[in-house]
Image 1 (tube, rainbow, N blue to C red):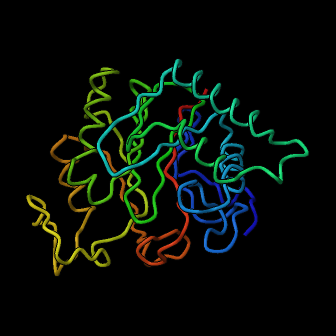
Image 2 (cartoon, rainbow, N blue to C red):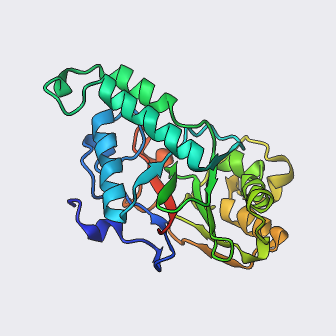
Length: 272
């Protein structure tokens, strides 16, 4: 599919914000990770993943992309200027340590490189910022990638919400954290939920969902229905759900469908 700009068209890019969702196309990864895998932790060649992240940043015109070490929890990372400066310094130190770009490029210890690179990313499942030119990203392959944008206060957020995240109401926690830190009114939030595994495909037989049992039908869990009720409870009225099911649509990575596979992302950034 190449890495032409047609593979990187944002859902929204109005000069104030750019946001959208990648597919599996436009990168350099090979085999089951082909081609725009953006996750280090799934077994792909970390140099290919690094290149894919560079391709995404370049095509979106962003200086930085901040990813997370996602653990299906409810921690929220706040990206401020101190975080950005410290992260960039750590990232550059690792590239220098492994001598990337020199004659030693092909002989580095890939596993050690990947481990050290992963260690500098925050362990979190949501991220928020008011910085301009910084893309914040969440990785998914069936879970829900959720993007939040308040054009009044000029702040953005990104949330990784699988079954565990939905049950912990990480979306609500992130929205309220944005309110606490940036003073936004939840009614000003616009929320975008990208491609995820739909209720017709998400088998959860044998699992007790507690208070979320009402969102289960024929042993299948409807994440979008649960998220919709959560948005209504928050008072958010501007929301958009993708009708794409990752399990059915092979343009997207799907863990449930393929097992060993890559990750696509939801991304959002304030323009400079």
